[in-house]
Image (tube, rainbow, N blue to C red):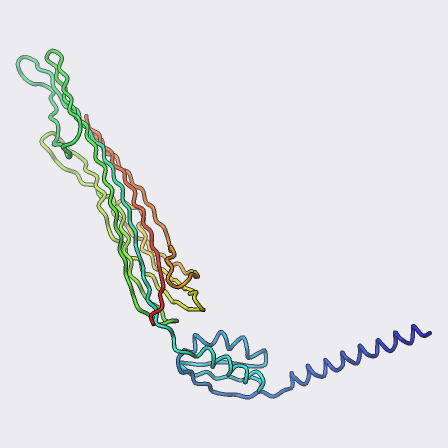
Length: 299
């Protein structure tokens, strides 16, 4: 009986606490709300709105335009909102954005040709004259046997180019900056050339620029910076006449102030072959490009 009495008293106590909690919740839910217009001095509504929306609660509403917030919330929450806005409505920092492009290009070319003829009745018949060489480095060879004579040559060339380009731009924290970045790639071009020895097809791969824009919005937290990046990228489609496709990508990265961080690495490889009667050529190349970004605070 004593145990049963204790259980009964405990159950009543728990029920009492539950009732008190429910009444307190009902009183909180029934608490009236107040409305207030809060003017921002340094930040825009777009920068402050996400923070305030998390504080108004289910019974509150917040809207705004320009540099004014219209808030409806309970008095207790309104006081907290004013304290938070006072902390975050500070002058935006002046930042220096640096974008660096590193480009390393390798190119190699090999070509060769054979020409010759056979002498019959003191006249040259069936001859094929060699074309002009495009490189003075290489190897020449001549073979003769009776009235037959062959001549050939082979040459090669390899080049390497290193380039580095850095752009800088000042921007206020929270504002969006646009940076134009050029991307070069080989575009195939084919032409037909008439020579005294017949028709020749010439394939060329000249470089063509495609514009890539970076929209960067930095936000600083301590000694770190969060970068919201939106890219508009013109990409070569690979068509014979060099078509360009446009695509957009949005991303967010975090880094420390004053440190370089790589945005992307692009490697293209192109090779081409051209062959005609008694001649052959091959060219290949690789272009490695990196885009890096760094944010410094200007004091």
